[in-house]
Length: 366
Image (cartoon, rainbow, N blue to C red; front, side, top):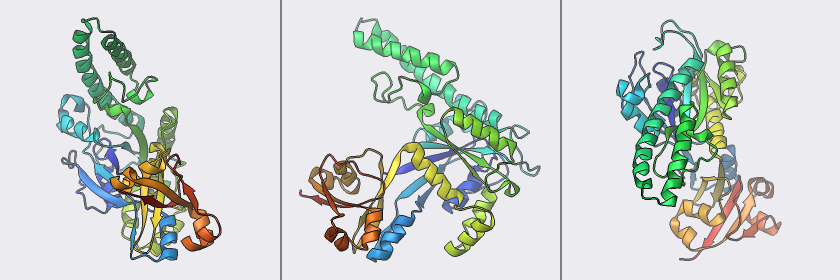
């Protein structure tokens, strides 16, 4: 499956600079609002030491990581939901992503203009959230109006849909996102194909000064963002976009040394991807053979046939069994043959739930 993350925030908070560092895609980044108009897209390989470890044992012709797609969406401003600052176009791009990465400026720099005049991350978060809510409310009211007319027929199912829409509207009008609505279900007849913006999960990314590394513990803005995120059950990742740009230019050995000198174990990219996987409930499984060692992304709880279908639909249609071994057992055994001989390789059927780190050989017939 393809994971798509949209990078959003006010103008000049460091979105494009961060995007450049994460994707090395060369997206334009300048010190004025609306520099980014059409969204920039970067496909980034997901770093995973387990893939490299398996490749070192198997020595395949090809090693293929799973990927994550970053979309750099232009800075939103007050009134975006009404079309200001090309807001309607920008908001439409958000509908297409799986996870919203909300970049918040937590650094002071008189040379970098802030569209609101000063640094206040919680205010900035409120501006973005309000615009998304306004757009969702507009979408909901249009649906409610149509269903209200249909409900006059007396159809009980339609009347129940109207009741659900009214409940959700009241929830949004109180300033609450769709994702916190207790009865939220995207497959509910009342909500199908509405694609609410605030139904998407959010991960907050604090952009800080180098002097506040490694975790921004002494930065009051970071503490405020963390507190805000915790209240809604979201994660916060702290990065310095300037430093991430420097890290992106280094080879692996130089990167390790540089990170160590900053008191960091992982780059911002690594920490961001790990957090994104947790937010979306994703796991990684592997296939390993002489032709290719490859990582695959699936949702937690995915059954073996569906996981096979990620590789090819024929694998799912003709699924017979999944010959499975955990990454740890594979590394201990040293090879697939040794894993079979030691009894660590298991034969799993259609009801097997794939686990993070599984190394799987799918047997199928079409």
